[in-house]
Length: 217
Image 1 (spheres, helix red, strand yellow):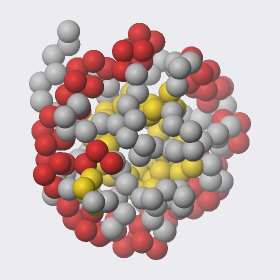
Image 2: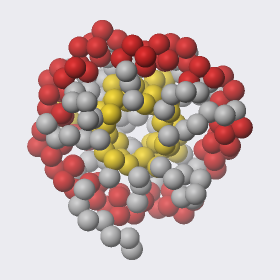
Image 3: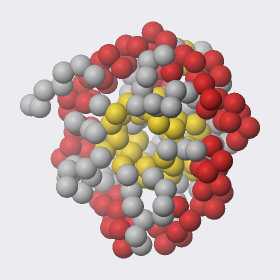
Image 4: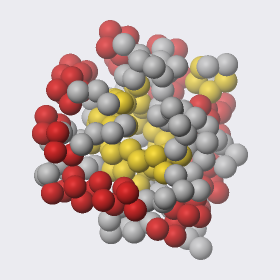
């Protein structure tokens, strides 16, 4: 199970998270987010992250050229794109590993499948799709869960081979979420925080529950 701990915003967060060796950590470059980091701070945090842990940069409607510049400067493993990006305008990121984010609402994942077709037509390869709950005005970190059952009904593993589940995941529900959806990976931010900092006991329990034996029904 690929596990990403997102919203690392301090050197203390980096040290706490690194001891549990998740597959990836996320640094949020969206300045309106309470978990945002500057390029300077990100540059101070990343040396504390073991090389074995993937580094994901989280971006919201920032210019592709700026994203590429940050990805190069910080040697990011993946760029995670939230917002209203147009596939035909992403040429600057064609050679980067992209995690495409879809905020799922009542309309299900049909719009996501159209987006993926457009990305393919524009020769923009996608490494994985992250599905989060749609909450007006927020781009992740809302604490709201996706409608897991609805997602499963529409989930086509051939079209979404690497689905990352996000949204309202906590130690208490992660095992159930995985057993229902069977995602390739999971992403957590607020669910492992206490008093706005990453919390070691919560991370430990989250990862233990996420990596437990989830047998297919």
